[in-house]
Length: 323
Image 1 (cartoon, rainbow, N blue to C red):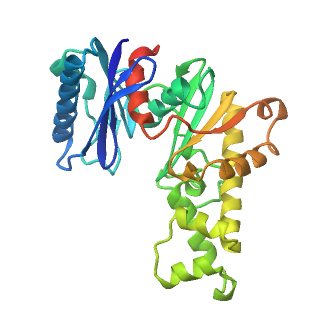
Image 2: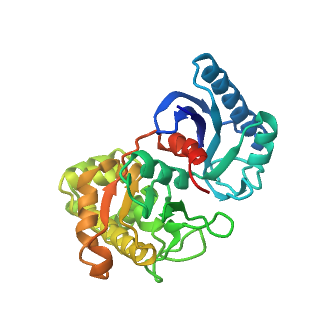
Image 3: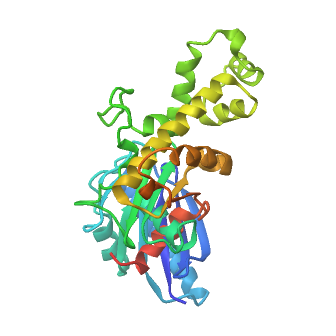
């Protein structure tokens, strides 16, 4: 079976693998991301590709159809250029990744946004398998988005489409670093959930705090979404308010996306959704109460199922998709 190489460039590491066209990953390597700028990152990516090509040859896995890359930031898919990167990756703006690598390795190279390639993985091997119209939300440090419309990834004029975390669900809401107010990311990301908890705690006297939260505050434990969910399950009333607000905000955002893109499935992934089905069920229950019934009722809401290697697999599968 034909294989390709997938590269997932993250904030702390670069993961790479050999992936069959069926979506099965045969080999994987992970290295820390260099901190000295784009030239070092490109060299590390090149070294990984060469090493995996040698492994493919030795294990009779050739031919390698090409190399697919997923990276955070706005990516000009047509040109293979990272236009605007992320603060987590140093010097990662205006990077001509495709042209530099294709000249070195003499293979076709595809470059796309990291959530777009996760959406590809979900469509091929995950929860969205068999669906032609998909919205994918990655709820983590931020809120990223990917949209598949009629079997094609929606990218926009220069790769900046599907900035779904920055749709505003409340024009009077908190200021977002994008310049807008009340963005979905302010409510449904890990830091957004922690922010809501901290703000609500300022309004609650200590005697109202549940024991799990009280002990965490006594230890000066940093507020995180994980701690909020732990407090929620312990019955803490403040955490329950926060989770209710999270689910309400996320449902409002999802309904707006359903109205916009008319998908048959919305896939929820990222670190926040490691909570799994219970959180998805709360969000879905609220979604069913909102929006145009003809659009909303038939849409499946699902937790991402492509697994922790979705970024590598989706990146590699670019080689086998229509542009």
